[in-house]
Length: 279
Image (cartoon, rainbow, N blue to C red; front, side, top):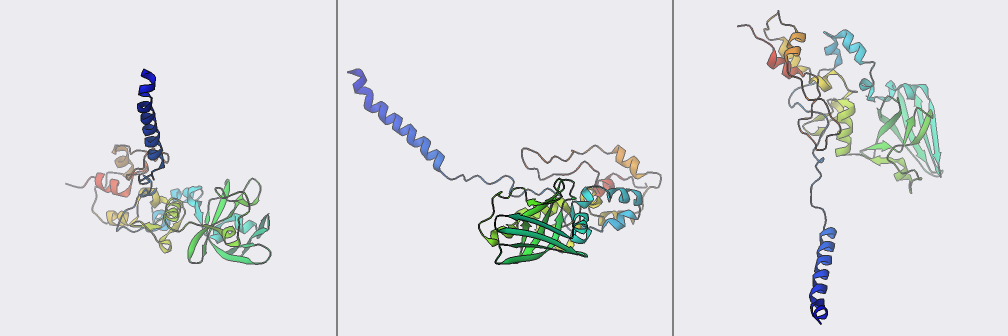
């Protein structure tokens, strides 16, 4: 009799717990994406990048060696891509779609056809030195698109771009590429080029292809202003740098985004602050 008497209470309690659990798991996640405002490259507002040729004026040997690194070729224009220049025609076929990249002189074009219609655009930017792969970005319908196919060194040919579906796309428009306009494009160009992001906005007319000296050390305009100041001649840059506290190294895999994301390289600003002035 005691068990029967308490059964309704236990049943109601069980139903309440199940309802509470279901409700909590069906509500939309209102948390904001912690990486929404993250930018991989530190911006210095109101300071201009001057280009590697200015850096080479004092650091010719370092400039030459930096030009041989993969960083310097993280982004290239089509005419500077050794892959495109060495392959006048690249093709890839999947299902009804055929992709073709043709190069003539300094210009390269990317096209896809389903046998009935063809969509073609010039390649605007080349991402990657092709140590492993190389991906192409195009302008299509006024937007930036990532090409659906990329070049892979291991097969010396084109195949699906990493992250895209392995199955043939459902339409020619989808087959052409993926729209990356907006936040993704800003992050791509911010990491692969220098000076492309200004005050959080992508300004492609101001970019320098690849990761140059200024990408880590800061815009060269600060150095130009610094050199015009009167400084103590007995102090070398190397001596000042050795006396500076080490900076936190770059970490691409931080658990949480950091707005003070900086490299371990000394910046021009930090040199200015540490440089002794004559008394």
